Length: 370
Ligand code: FAD
Image (cartoon, rainbow, N blue to C red; front, side, top):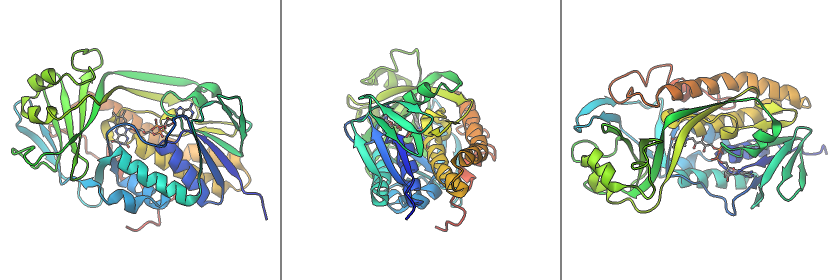
């Protein structure tokens, strides 16, 4: 019997789980090293579009994700006076689902476990050797046919590979919070919509995740120390967007602030080491496609390497050529919308250019029928 090929992966986030699952489905063995002492997702809510749903179906996580997620009947923009500026409907052929991050993570983790992925928790990776090994903080070498840096935006694997990096930072960032939904949350509009509430200086993206949970993405200038404080300075936010005061009252001491950033790399792989997800292509969250691109690229990688047979390096070349243009397009369009009201005020955020990623049929999903 031929030896099963093996992939070692740094990082047990969405990118790492998707990569490991996709390779196991193609006869490989896969092991994820997660630096944290437990497997879980941090953050509050998340948007997954049609492209991501197709990948989740291919990974075996779709049914569990859709059960209990929220499909908003519309996407609305409201101004400082709480007047509607826009209302957009996406239609059934390009769904936009919202959910808690933990809901998505649990479904993807269960799919990975069913596929036979092995996990090492509290296992920090500090470098990759392009000949085919991950190096642990404890000095151990983990050899494999392919090694993957899926270790997030501050990737040590990326730094160790010395890939030329172009980093863009932005003026704004976001506080992410989960609060309970209330029966009377919004009387002025449909409380099941996803809604951008604009204040003069701050903005809140109101996102139902399920019947109980509401995700607030609170956008603020990164130098606005008063408004970006954690715990959230409710007084400032209530003054700015008074019609959400009753919802701000439900915020506890939780929450985190992340500033927006985008990084583009000269190349996504060096030898047998490859970068996937935020380690390779972080982007502002304005299109809600960072994780979508991460899992598309993960599945696309497994497909390309499977197709390449014994010529793994050719598989990596084909993968990068095939997947990278859409990822870079998504990064570019996401960057345009950092401080732009399009999508809220009837602007063109939902045009064919911005929706290209959501409408894309990811590699490895052409045969999927829902
Ligand atoms: P991560 O989720 O960061 O996972 C990396 C994992 O690696 C972590 O578990 C970490 O503990 C582990 N790790 C780190 N260092 C090491 C190490 N040295 N060794 C071992 N393990 C390590 N995307 C969407 O698709 N839809 C959205 O709605 C959306 N909203 C967003 C909102 C905000 C405010 C932000 C900031 C991002 C948003 N994104 C969204 C983007 C999305 O969160 C990321 O693209 C996605 O989480 C990337 O997954 P990842 O697995 O690459 O990285």
